[in-house]
Every structure is written in structure tokens, then in C-alpha cells.
Image 1 (cartoon, rainbow, N blue to C red):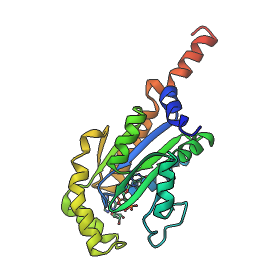
Image 2 (spheres, rainbow, N blue to C red):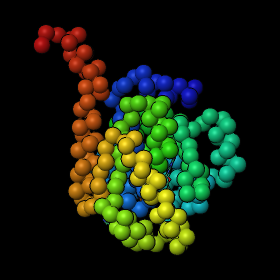
Image 3 (cartoon, protein in one colour):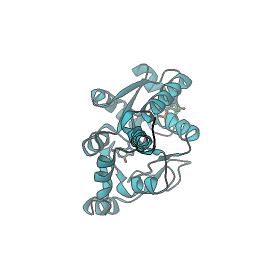
Length: 217
Ligand code: ADP
Ligand code: 5GP
């Protein structure tokens, strides 16, 4: 049943927006995501499953569904994920149930904060998905932001910096590149993308057709 969700999304091409936000760790994706969620409350946020331990201030089922690895592997076996990947030594996945919940709730769409491996998998299943990659203005600034977050120890910072180049090298798979130099400007760019994407012909053609059916224009 849940597996049908992706097929339905592909076939429907309806006005349910699916947007992926990716970036190297520290570029500001979480910050931009939470600003978008505030501005567009009708947009659901996909709460991923992860085997990573919660950081200070993170709540189960708010930032992530925090699970142990055997439970995560069981969900993989049950085909419960739209995508999943190993990122920075932990497992992360987007459950099909999360997407279905957002659709059932009548949300405007759903926002995925996932890495490039997950973006590739979702794009393969739902080509209409909108994908945005956030770039830092420079590698120096990326390092500064990673350190300023102060939630990770030095080896973690080093590991994430080393991985940043690999992540950036996948930029060409994304529809949009947004440079997060000034936060407010980057946010304006993100909002423009959402507004423009929601006006795409394929999302509004059902309305146009129903207007044609109903009367003389
Ligand atoms: P990510 O989710 O991509 O790992 P975060 O959103 O956690 O990154 O941001 C990393 C750090 O950089 C945070 O401390 C955040 O407040 C800061 N930050 C985000 N965007 C900007 C910006 N445009 N200018 C300066 N600092 C920023
Ligand atoms: P963090 O541990 O800092 O919250 O996230 C680390 C990385 O994992 C980020 O790049 C984030 O986008 C990615 N991530 C979070 N959830 C998922 C998910 O469900 N699937 C995939 N593929 N990546 C995810």
C-alpha cells in the first residue's frame, strides 16, 4: 500500500510540491529549512529516521525519528523507505509513511532535508521533485559555520569538511543552486523558487481544464 505512494505521486503530477534541500554540512540548510517552515506552515517537513544520537536540544519525532541500527535495518527490509543512505557514518532515511502523512493532511507539499544520495534516489522515483542545493560562499566560511555550531567535536568537524567536496561535486544533479552568503537574501531566493514552482503549468493544468469544462471563457 505504502509503496504505491511514489507511483501515485509520479502519475498524479498534481499540486503537491515535493522539494529537496541539500548542502554540505554547515552551509545553512537547517537554518533555511526552519525559516521556510515558519513562512509556509502549510508545507510539511519530512522527519527522517536516523541512527545518529540526538544533539542537545533535538527532540525525538521533531528533528528526527531516532532509532537503533537493528530497527533501521528492519525498516529497510520492509521496504518502508522512499530513500535511505549512510551519511557521516550514520544511517538516514525518508519513510514512505512520512510522505503519505503529509498528503493525507492536505499539506501544500513536503520539504526533504536529505543528502545527495537520497536526492538521487527520490529523483529517480519522482522526476517532478524540485531539488535545491545550498552552497556556502567559500570553503573558509563553511569551516567557520561548522565550528560556530559548536555541536560537534573536532574529528566530526574535520570529517564533515573532508566530505564537503564530495557533496559539492554532485551539484549538477540539482535543479537550483542557492548561495547562502547573506541569510535573508538566500531565504528570498528560496521563497522565489517555491512560488515559481507552485505556478508551473503541470501543477495548475487540472484547474485550467476544469474551467474549460465548466463554461465559456
Ligand atoms: P546545515 O544544516 O547545512 O548543516 P546549519 O543551518 O546548521 O547548517 O548552519 C550552520 C551554522 O551556520 C549555524 O550556526 C547557522 O546559524 C550558521 N549560518 C547559517 N546560515 C548563515 C549565513 N547566511 N550567514 C552566517 N551564518 C549562517
Ligand atoms: P545531521 O546529522 O547534521 O542532521 O545531517 C547530516 C546529513 O544527513 C545532512 O546532509 C542531511 O541532509 C542528511 N540527511 C538527513 N536526513 C536524511 C535522510 O532521510 N536521507 C538522506 N539520504 N540524508 C539525510
